[in-house]
Length: 141
Image (cartoon, rainbow, N blue to C red; front, side):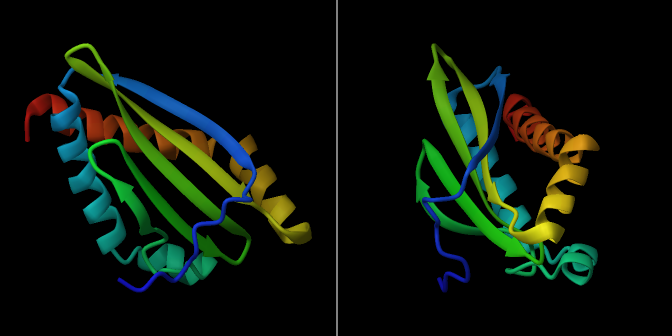
């Protein structure tokens, strides 16, 4: 797999969101793996046109450590980012976490970051991702 965006270890921490999943860690990992496959395989044409995302989907898998962690990375005109999903066992169930790291260079990057955080768009998008994975795991699909 060609890696279009290197895993940057120097990106600033942005935030963390988490969700308790009423499913086993194995089932949660399966749902996450499926979700990530769909996310990285889609083209998100509008995002690509508006932001110039690389890769076109906005994310690529740069590292995976089943059944514990998957690291996604990407970039666009205003930011370079990394999204880390972790599945932590909690008894018979799991805790699904999403950790975000991003750099927003220059004045345009600063403006983009401000709009993203003030609008709560990032928070809502991340929580929607966690909710989608949790629902799939809990349904047993």
